[in-house]
Length: 59
Image 1: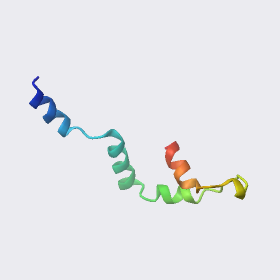
Image 2: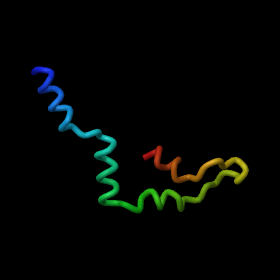
Image 3: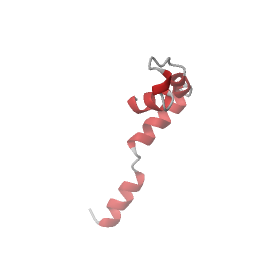
């Protein structure tokens, strides 16, 4: 397999994380909004960011 064939193959491949995000957005678009609704048990003075990015990292 030559360099041009390898480049063509890579161009057709998708980033697996982008593909996962596309599936999530199509079948469950309100998922990240629901993450924002999860109650945060920490004391308010310790919270520097909402739970939404925290739960998105877990997923």
